[in-house]
Length: 284
Image 1 (cartoon, helix red, strand yellow):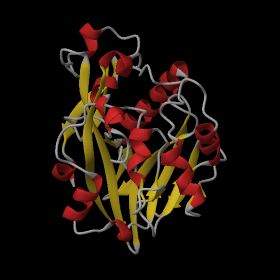
Image 2 (cartoon, one colour):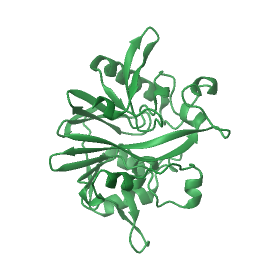
Image 3 (cartoon, rainbow, N blue to C red):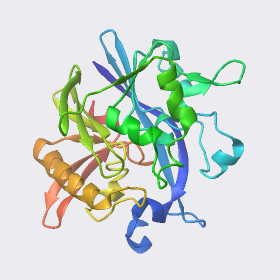
């Protein structure tokens, strides 16, 4: 097995929305905001080579939305999903599996593209199986008013229409062996049945954090996003996870932290706190 971090682009989101009820005087220490109160965030995917499989975890925001849509998110930088995939020597047709932690637009938008005629949409990875889970799929295709703007039908429905969609069965909060050395934790605070991959790699457990822990600035328990649909559940899920991460020496792979690619945690008298930050290739 070989793992590659894959940055799909950078964008900006309102700092208050990203930290909920936490005062700006606290969160700006780790995530400074610009004059418009916007903070920088990455959309970092992961590519896993494992035998005859080439697995992509999350796909960023894509490039098919309107100029008006993108203007709300201040896209910046030169990274792109397809560009960085090609820089690693792969083409979109090489991807065998697209694992979507959840179906918010900044996690799945790059998985769908315009067709050649620009009359409709199609999977960007035509040879891949797209993986979601049935609970979340129903949640996303019948969206509540709060999340409706994050679940865009053009990002979601073409997956099913193509026949490339499969569901990972959820029978509890943890499913083992989704792929070899690849387990999944299910959490419900951010959105229904978000999937958090746990990957065994070089005698370590690497956890792809998705939106359970967007950045190192979110480690303290009350630092919960305003986007979360069930913030009290997030706090409970996060507390359980962080304690397990310290106990089992997990390496956390951060999807949205624009500065820190990975981190480890430690227990302190104030609770779980940051131990170290590093680039993925510095440890592996």
